[in-house]
Image 1 (tube, rainbow, N blue to C red):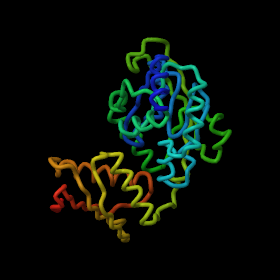
Image 2 (cartoon, helix red, strand yellow):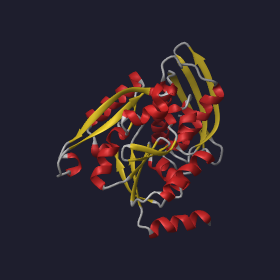
Image 3 (cartoon, rainbow, N blue to C red):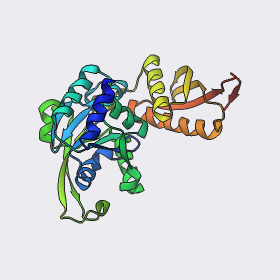
Image 4 (cartoon, one colour):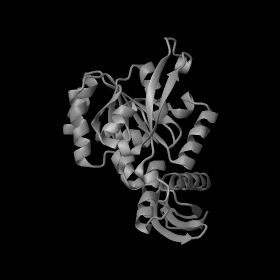
Amino acid sequence: MNYLFRHIQWVLKGVKVFALVGKSGTGKSFRAKLIADKLGIELLIDDGLLIRGKKIIAGKSAKKELTYLGAIKTALFDDKTHRDSVIKTLREEKFKRILIIGTSERMTHKIAARLHLPQISKVIKIEDIATEEEINTAVRSRKLEGKHVIPVPAVEINRNYSQMVYDSVKVFMEKKFLNFTKKGKYFEKTVVRPEFSKKGRVSISESALTQMILHCADEYDGSITIMKVSVREEISGYILKLNVRLPYGTEVSDKIHSFRDYLIDSLQRYSGIEIDSVSINVEDFFTKKKKV
């Protein structure tokens, strides 16, 4: 009831929520300020931070976390103290538009609900604002170098996260961006190397890896239920065997192959481990098993 009351308050104030969605490492944070300027968006939510203009006004950075799982929990405002502090600041700020950055629509909807914001009115996909070449370049940089972007100037990051700062870049917004017709502008962004992506962290416990797999399944499609995870580490990488359950009527082959690709990509990109293979046994509601 309390959430519903707050939700109605935001709606009555005319607050609109936007989402920028794309796979991890595709350059969302890099382009967030360009979108915000184009659409007149005052606030950004990115990896646990609440940002206004060039300043971080609330929250804590997921990129400060020592593990990928910790980073995910921070980005989703899983901790009550963290979540409540951002909700409090949102109530105090005057704004009409806010942009939530996430790896999927499901993630952005979850963040909006946890921060008691209205439902998302418009979803912008990274593919709509960046070319395939630009996205591939961003992905390669993330995978090879572990670099991430926070959409505020380096001086702002140095206040609390100086040990993470790798570089500072200026991005010029061309007039043609999103049909932008005004005079071009420069935006400064900070390139950081998070704790969880530093080289050398190549070993992970079975329990931590299982938690990451559970998160990936939930993030990819909430209807996928992980029943059992088996992990074996070899010289060539980790060998994973999963038992999952899907809703009756699901197109098994397409769903599982797509999920397997997503899982391998996510685990290798964020944990730094190598995945040798992933095999998935699917159980329907009638517990009939078939090998995929």
